[in-house]
Length: 599
Image: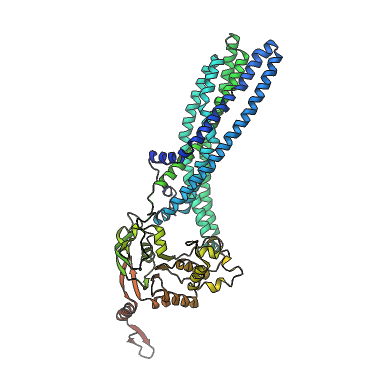
């Protein structure tokens, strides 16, 4: 399994990360300005209650002004109602922002994943890609949730500080010192909590990667009774993630409790200093109470900042991971010119491919010229590079050196959409997608007619099986096609490759789940297609191989031999006969003798 740390896309420079965020946020700038304006009035109205209390204590009670009290109550009730309307307005704006950000980020993420080269997708475990979608949620929630409101409230903290200076100057200096203490505490919390969050995230990635393997291998686990072993690994990964969460929680709690203690100290100091100022007649009781109320409006967001710093740390990490992904090189998305349908000639000119910069070649020095039309079998022992060669022909892998041509044109210049239109592919692992049989056959050609779908299914020898199902082509295949027999899944995958009549077909073990009769039927279909289609088959099936016009035999990433099938097989048989060791037969008797005979 890939190491958890290695599964995270490399952290990019700050500027590119900020660039993609700027591109994301820029269309929403007018809406963020509205939120800021509404927040200004919300925070301005927050001054009304402390002023109300100040006036009640200093004017109404001292002068017995009941009429003044009536006016103040009516006014403050109107302020409360207006405050409610403003808060609802701000919430609706942020909900709209959240929806639009979710659409923008998710769409960009899906577009990026579908445009990355296959090697980039294969280089990381499934849990990494799942994590990126959670990162998109983090970005959306941070830019449009409570944390966004908290950020705007923090901006107006200076306003409350200034008002305290006006109405209660003696306690202003206490509040200023406490404010500086909160800023220092929040900065320290950001440093340590972000580090602990990084470590926790790595451990969560390791656990999620194991869960993905657990789900993917559920049949094997059940068949081999691996439950105890899997449970042990799960407990180890879960323990590591829990310990990471505990460590991060301990860091967070430490600073949260320090912030709460600092709030209490602020209240004690303000009350003490304020009482002394009242005794010296430098401050009124109403002024002290109002200052305490305003201080809570100032210190409350700072308290929240310390407690929710993990959210901002997660936002930074998520933005960096998404930024790194968005900078990765994509496949060609649009061909410079629309080429006509190729005849199907395939040329590999001195092609070498490595799975990593320091990895040994998976295939090396491949020189192959496949004429248009006919069937070519690619054979060889496991691990000799057959599937890699097929993916190079498909353009799914880019050669480390050398070039792959179709009809004399370098396939690197063509988009994935064009190549998929020209080359039908049946992978070794025939994956179907949740939906109906019809949807799976037509997934690459959603506009295909019923006649075209039936024709492709008939060629794949799937039609007669499908129409016998109670719901026919409307039958649900289930997750990964698990509700269908393996043979039918494979035939549907073949029909999917045949739909659209591509001039080139690349099939990797297309008969692995078929019985002999179905194999013979598929062979006959392929022979008919081979008159005007180029068919490359990675196969060990004798029946399919014997029907092929040409054979390529690979060994250790190189082509050992290639040519007309009959000639290759005759040469191989002669070689085996020449290399065969003599068979020693022990003859029983009173005088045992050994007789040698050729096989």
